[in-house]
Length: 149
Image (cartoon, rainbow, N blue to C red):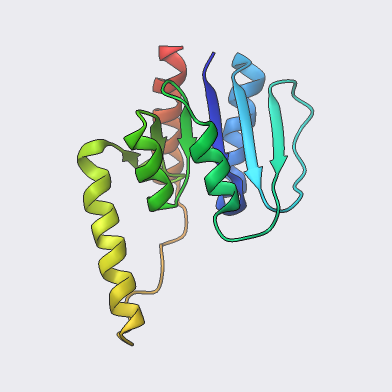
């Protein structure tokens, strides 16, 4: 059976709650990977994998363990690019589907903005607050993934 891998350190609580309800309803394996402890409900198919603190430690574990057929939930564009390259489905907590067609563009934009910031140019104020439309888009992608199982 497929596994849902969650880059849990930056995943909003409301998205984790949607995943917990899905795990309770379907029994799908949900692995939250984080470098700090977080409480997770007592659902047999939900597990917290706590990794050591450090740059990309959680991302590296997800990238190594995720297999085609799995789903990765992440806002981290480089991680999404790595797992998509392996044939793994990836979506953001906002419900953005990362596909081979879209991930390269998102990675290029991320790199461009990082270059601008490192040059001293102020760029945007960060992402907008997660809204109802984002939650619905995420839930719709999750439902489609679960229906394929």
